[in-house]
Length: 496
Image 1 (cartoon, rainbow, N blue to C red):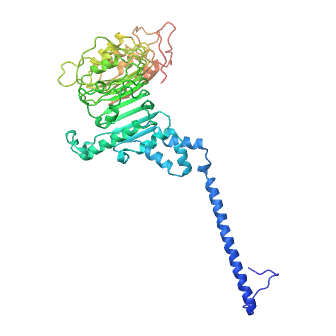
Image 2 (image 1 turned 90 degrees about the vertical axis):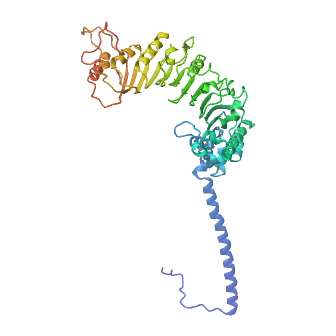
């Protein structure tokens, strides 16, 4: 850089007399002190913008209400339903450890603490020390209803057979830890049993003893119960903890192998609106317990049930009247080996006058037994409100004859949606029966499923394309002069 005209360039070393050297040294010291002070001030000036930037960061500028809603979304399962293996404890803990602001917002958002999910296989460390952390968790949930999702199975690969389990001190210690945690939950001053709205119990009954030992007036605020025990209870054991759950509306039971849990749990049936009972295909117990329970379900709106396959139950004296039922999902099972006669299914004795949607699944059942039970169903109480019918025939002994199926469908002329899955045979006769004949036809036969709007078909085996399908579709579309005459049979237009 060129020197400015007003500046003189020093080409030679400067030489000062002794007095000037002393003055010069003092000036240098003052200059250094001044520069040191200035640098100190600069550090404060640099630190101040950094703290301001931290305060004004996007995370800290979010309104607390919005941040709280974000936390709720983060703590919600992706598929929209809580389950025992969901790691809600780790998620809430992580949110609380980001910074002071986030911790305060998380602790002041009770909804993220109102669903407690615990699974022995997934969260073993949470049971150490008897789960004392639960006290603080429940305090943060405030007065919101609490939902518990508990999965406490017995892992035979780790503990051995059921007979050997009791010999393992490690297993016994785990049972004690689980019991301590459950007692922490139900003894907590912020967690009244009336505050628990939903509970899901999966696993070995021995882990849930503190719950089963609660009195009959426990859980009066309970609305939903799901029970899946991995082994049966003793014959004379009863659980009445839920017997006074006056708000109970939804009940799900997954049965063990040899004894229905409905014989163990005393449950209020008359107020249920949704009942789902699932059995394993190889369950072996008398299914009359279902008939006894269902006769009490006068308010039931939705029923999903697959009664066990083996025993023939004795028919009750009266039909099972379900006057409010609108949705029915029923599975027919193969009768057990050694049964000379399969008897009849529960469907045979149902009376469901308001039924709107019915799904029927055949699992290695004889179609003639299936047809007989549906005929009895219509005889008990005509299903004039039925609009949707789904038949799943993926697990049948042999291909179902199309005309046999047509005879069953004649029982349900009001349905507007028909779904047929697992087709293994020629359905052309069925489509012929569904084809509308115009007014010029001399055929006086009644068109099958005259009100059908939606038709869905699924073929299980590779087969030739049904030649009668397209003519049936065209006859229902009012094309090519097929529009019905005013005096002709009323047939709906197929829409989908």
